[in-house]
Image (cartoon, rainbow, N blue to C red; front, side, top):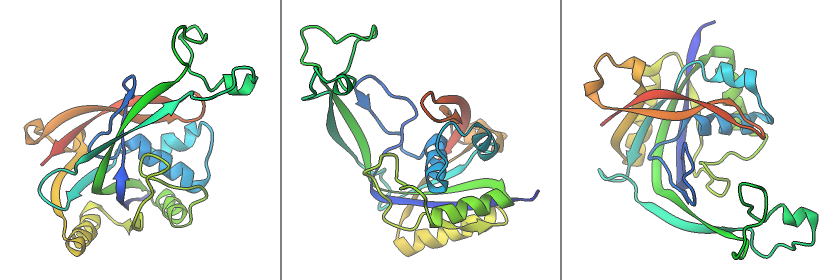
Length: 234
């Protein structure tokens, strides 16, 4: 079946995209991850649980990401914090589950039973994502994003989009990029960089080669991911 390009526009006061958690710091990459986009699509379509077969079809080809800013400087970051495990009743079996445990499953000794996590987010960031998909799947996802079953968000549930996400289905990348450039000009934005699959470049010297651990195999209670290579081109 013929492939199409689904165009997404990701804009909001705050966005956060990370591919790996590091202890008590939840940092963000400076562009959306493939796993986060897949999660957004599953939410829009009301697809819960593992979704192995759907994710296999959805991730056959990697997205292309374009980053824009209000100036030529990358968006600034905001750091806040979240407490986990505070003020739960240890006598209540359910509330006891909410208190952080040691790796052995027991409450840590000589600590109050709560943790502080520091979380980073980007401020006033703008991204376009080109998703190469089979024509029928592109249409299904497009309609789902226009009328989402569950809330869609930009990395965290509190970070809601401030503009329309689904921006159309196009015959190829060139047609989609014409629309991207039109949106960029309407908003007065500057191009910062793009992230493309490593397979699209015959010369890795054109940009920075990176490895991302963001290709979802399954969601649900026991998430699984695999890695991919991409190139950042300024």
